[in-house]
Image 1 (tube, rainbow, N blue to C red):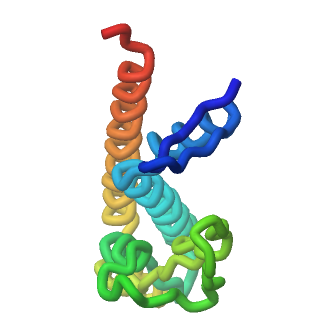
Image 2: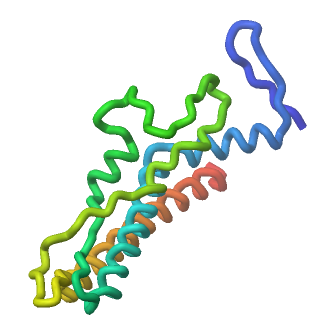
Length: 164
């Protein structure tokens, strides 16, 4: 089965059903909300790993707690400051059909030192109570983002399967 896509005037081209479905699915799932959800889930996951490392090292002498600047990392992923800037180590796309395989904004997340805890006699500044609160808050943020993503997918499923 083929679909004919009209480009205007007398321009048209035929594409196979499988290619049409792939294009349709990519358009449905490649919107700003889905991209933001993906980035937020990835950041929450990475922040959890950092916070878990803090908890595991709460008794390690001279260990300094670390955390993730969530807003800064999200801005960095979207290049909010300069839309025309090409990220470092980024392959330049010379054609719109090229895949953007190189840019992975969260591959190297920048953890910052967290000085919210008092430094103990051993030089460790991890406050386990503060850290566990941050883990709980981060877990809630992850769950909320996942819930929003689930609602978006349910809306898409309803729109696709409705007989209205």
